[in-house]
Length: 312
Image (cartoon, rainbow, N blue to C red):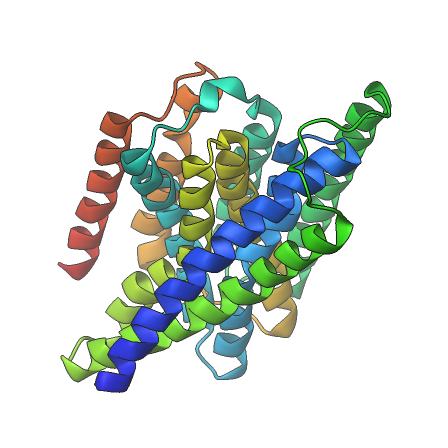
């Protein structure tokens, strides 16, 4: 038990440090190459923070627990919206009114709708996996085209890069974040699961709560540091990009490893809660409202209510 609590503590520290490094590296990378920080957060940052979900999904299928892979994706996406956006807003207001994320948000909703539709054609097989990966490729292509247009519109002068941070430091910060976040999440999840088992909590509840929250902690750590650094575009882009990668990339790759069954409770409850949570971003995306402390408390409270429903 002592070692488990130590794993939790060390994992949390690693997550915070790695999240700070990834935000710093991503922002300076965007400034250095002349593309919006939102694009970097939608791709590099989002994919890096989703690494734990990918590892757990593949491992769950190989170990004969394919339902855990789906539960982790759905649970993590719900946590990303309610918890990962809510908690940082309590710490510092996220000025999302200053960034335009409408196109990426619409892509996320389309990815969510596609995912839900495929779940009704259960089980999710390799054919569905290829469809999801094709959608991910289309999203990445759109991000690449957008980044190129933005860069072509800029002049050659680089502004805003932190003094003393050249390419070696930028790459070091990115590597530190991308490696540290999965490591910290793994330690935290392992310690939390062992503690939960000690108190007799079922593995189903562990998967829907601790594992989902644990694999969302890289996003949470990154978003917290982005909010503190007043980088709302990185924070929002990280959440949207991570959710798209979870739905399209992780599920797509996992389906190539083995079929994923869809339990009735997902079709009846969890998928729709995930969709409803995603739609809660509309005021911040289209109405340009800032994510204030009051919003943060409300979103976090909704997630707490969601956990109560699961535990019940």
